[in-house]
Image (tube, protein in one colour):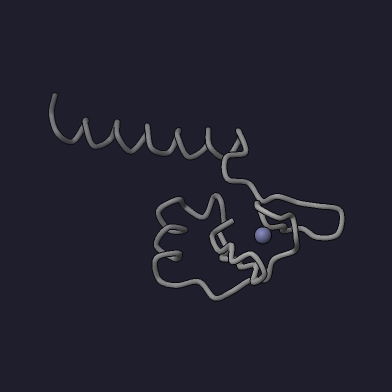
Length: 82
Ligand SMILES: [Zn+2]
Protein backbone atom coordinates (compact mmCIF):
# COMPACT_ATOMS: atom_id res chain seq x y z
CA UNK A 1 0.00 0.00 0.00
CA UNK A 2 1.40 3.42 -0.74
CA UNK A 3 2.21 5.59 2.25
CA UNK A 4 -0.08 8.47 1.34
CA UNK A 5 -3.12 6.20 1.37
CA UNK A 6 -1.99 4.68 4.67
CA UNK A 7 -1.69 8.11 6.34
CA UNK A 8 -5.07 9.09 4.94
CA UNK A 9 -6.70 5.95 6.33
CA UNK A 10 -5.10 6.47 9.76
CA UNK A 11 -6.41 10.06 9.84
CA UNK A 12 -9.92 8.94 8.88
CA UNK A 13 -9.84 6.23 11.57
CA UNK A 14 -8.65 8.80 14.13
CA UNK A 15 -11.46 11.24 13.32
CA UNK A 16 -14.05 8.44 13.46
CA UNK A 17 -12.66 7.35 16.84
CA UNK A 18 -12.97 10.92 18.17
CA UNK A 19 -16.59 11.15 17.10
CA UNK A 20 -17.38 7.72 18.58
CA UNK A 21 -15.86 8.90 21.88
CA UNK A 22 -17.92 12.08 21.69
CA UNK A 23 -21.22 10.34 21.02
CA UNK A 24 -20.71 7.60 23.58
CA UNK A 25 -20.09 10.28 26.23
CA UNK A 26 -16.55 9.20 26.95
CA UNK A 27 -14.92 11.54 29.47
CA UNK A 28 -18.02 13.68 29.77
CA UNK A 29 -18.51 16.26 32.45
CA UNK A 30 -20.30 15.00 35.51
CA UNK A 31 -23.13 17.11 36.76
CA UNK A 32 -25.01 17.27 40.01
CA UNK A 33 -28.09 19.19 41.19
CA UNK A 34 -26.17 22.27 42.31
CA UNK A 35 -23.41 22.55 39.73
CA UNK A 36 -22.49 21.88 36.13
CA UNK A 37 -19.12 20.42 36.97
CA UNK A 38 -18.70 18.11 39.89
CA UNK A 39 -15.70 16.23 41.15
CA UNK A 40 -15.70 12.59 39.92
CA UNK A 41 -14.63 11.41 43.36
CA UNK A 42 -16.72 13.37 45.83
CA UNK A 43 -19.40 15.07 43.64
CA UNK A 44 -18.60 18.56 44.91
CA UNK A 45 -18.45 21.58 42.58
CA UNK A 46 -15.02 22.24 41.11
CA UNK A 47 -13.29 25.44 40.15
CA UNK A 48 -11.74 26.13 36.77
CA UNK A 49 -8.01 26.69 36.66
CA UNK A 50 -5.73 27.90 33.91
CA UNK A 51 -4.87 25.47 31.17
CA UNK A 52 -1.26 24.84 30.29
CA UNK A 53 0.22 24.38 26.81
CA UNK A 54 -0.39 20.63 26.88
CA UNK A 55 -4.10 21.23 27.27
CA UNK A 56 -4.15 23.57 24.26
CA UNK A 57 -2.33 20.96 22.19
CA UNK A 58 -4.79 18.29 23.31
CA UNK A 59 -7.72 20.52 22.31
CA UNK A 60 -6.15 21.19 18.93
CA UNK A 61 -5.43 17.50 18.35
CA UNK A 62 -9.05 16.66 19.09
CA UNK A 63 -10.27 19.51 16.81
CA UNK A 64 -11.96 21.17 19.82
CA UNK A 65 -14.65 18.49 19.74
CA UNK A 66 -14.47 18.04 23.49
CA UNK A 67 -13.40 21.57 24.43
CA UNK A 68 -11.54 20.36 27.50
CA UNK A 69 -11.09 22.74 30.38
CA UNK A 70 -8.99 22.22 33.40
CA UNK A 71 -10.69 21.88 36.76
CA UNK A 72 -9.63 21.44 40.33
CA UNK A 73 -11.29 20.59 43.56
CA UNK A 74 -9.17 21.64 46.49
CA UNK A 75 -10.61 19.57 49.32
CA UNK A 76 -9.99 16.15 47.83
CA UNK A 77 -7.17 17.25 45.51
CA UNK A 78 -8.79 16.07 42.28
CA UNK A 79 -7.43 17.88 39.24
CA UNK A 80 -7.88 17.21 35.59
CA UNK A 81 -9.50 17.89 32.26
CA UNK A 82 -13.21 17.70 31.60
ZN1 LIG B 1 -13.49 15.41 45.05
